[in-house]
Image 1 (tube, rainbow, N blue to C red):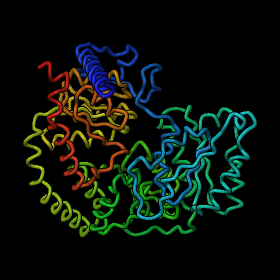
Image 2: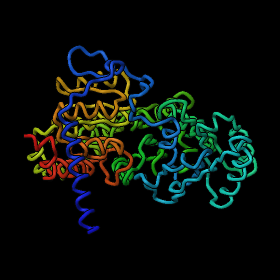
Image 3: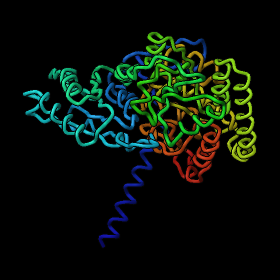
Image 4: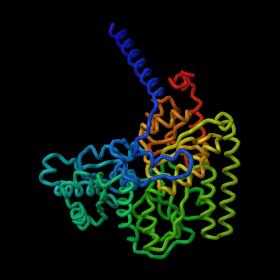
Length: 472
């Protein structure tokens, strides 16, 4: 009886959810009036960007605290201590795909677990004792202390505590000014870069290394950094430091000795690259490792910088070998995906360019594209790259995403963990291109993995039962 009742209740719930989805599919969704300037849907380009999120729009952005952790947490031999309530420490790097070739201290998340009494009387003593205990236990190369919203409110002197512990323990103990209320994760990126720069140059050596680069802004998701390093090493290029995937404190100390900085994720570490250029004269170039075109360009650009014929020939050889092996394997996926429509929404705008090109390689049409932290210039370039009529969005929200997915009748949505439910509720295939994924999508082998994942998502027979498909 209980089993039958459960089946009946479950069936009723499923029917109710199906009706709700059908109703949502039939409704017209309008843009919030104050959001219209951050959406471009054709005609003369006139967008606004880099604005604070509109109150009530339920932005997909994260806070400043989250941004700082995104950049710093992959440093695998450092201690990461969150000074604040326990809830702020719940989002650990362990649920992300950043891998280490050695120590894995970054997979542990520590918190001072501020309680009501600590908020009233201050948490500096608690922070001091937590740092001493953790440093004695784990012997880290450095420690990062993240200030959260409540710490900014009560005014704990985090820097003074860090300075005291650093003097006692002899390792860098760095306060990260990452109070969440300061703004979006873009402010957190800056706070993380400021913290990192305090370590740079502390190895005591000034001489630069020949044919050397730093890879900035890659987080070694699913081991992607190792793929990229292999390409560069096959060209005769030495990688001095990576920030911050598979990162090491001692490597960051000597980051100033590299001849060139390769900035992979322009939003997260561009401040660090600018500081290195200003202080040490190290030039920077932007690169993307997603897709055949951008991956090839990233290798050629390094060879061009060093103006080395042998290196250029090696880069050409690497690209020819990889592409020759890749293209025949892409053919069957291209055949099935030709003419399918995709929507793309990521954290940084630079990644969107690569995804548009990669989807075009697979024969797909991008009908919506946007990011959380892009600039007006980014979106102007994006509108020129995309086909006419492609919707370009800045700092969008679930309602807008649902609107454009419905109106454009997309077959695939590429985003992060927060966008996945939107796609599935609307009966759309989804591809995770954010930090939670466990599949390498960078490099030439990453393009093949990307094609496989996109194909599996778009061509799944389950979508024929979605309400939006059932209507037709």
